[in-house]
Structures are given as C-alpha cells and as structure tokens.
Image (cartoon, rainbow, N blue to C red; front, side):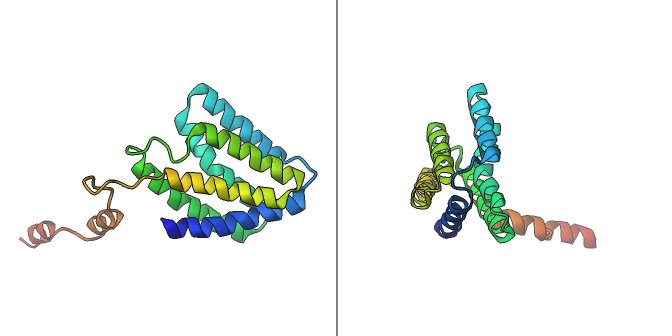
Length: 167
C-alpha cells in the first residue's frame, strides 16, 4: 500500500500544481458543487454516499486538468486505495474522519482557486498522509482478505470437481 501512496503523492501534487496555475483567480464551480454534495451526504448521515464522494474528489480534480494520463492513472490508484479501505473498514471506522475530509477538501479548493500552488500541494500531501495513516491493516491475530487466494480459487477448478467430471 505504501507504493500506491507514493504514486498518489506524485500524481496529486502535480495535479494540484497544474490546477492552481491554470485556475488561480477563478471559481472551480464543479468542485464547489462536489463539496456541497459531500456536505449534504454528511448532514443526512449517508455514509455510503459520503464515502463514494470523498473517493471521487481527487478523481474529479484530475479530470479538470484535461490531462487524460492524470485522470486514468489516478483513477486506478484511488480504486486500489478504496479496496484496501473497504477491506479494513471493519477494523478502522474510516481511513479519514469525516470532519477532516470536509475541511481538507474545502481548504484544497480554496488554495487552488487562489492560485496558491505551494499551499495546494502542501494541503494535498497532508490530506493523503491522513488517508494513509487511517488505513489500519489487521493485527497479526486477524486475517485480512487474501485477494490472491480469492482469484486463484475462482480461476482454478477444484481437484474434487475435476475428479467428479471424469467419472
């Protein structure tokens, strides 16, 4: 997971710099609408919708750059992160507490709109630090989901089925 966050830090820092440079002095209406949707989900106590929206936040920022490589690469990294968060959600209530998302996302948008590249980059990296720190792998006594085991079980027919098929 550490490598995923290394890639995310590089991508999201570059995305923040791109947006602050291009959009400084302008309102990011799409992202303001996104923040409103997050706040509505938060107010309604809709954790599933809030989780979806907070995961979509960075992907939408990448899309605004109009650089398809940013969008495609970040979408994959966010998907990997979301799988891990979903896997460990029973052990850790959330990878990033809701109040941190609310303020961090809003602060990032404000820095981008102000054209403050350094602040936008710093806030983006701080946000990713919080997300990564909130992901708690299982303790040695707990067994997490083994994705390789699941895939290999689905991909290979069991020896029992093969023997029955030959009879």
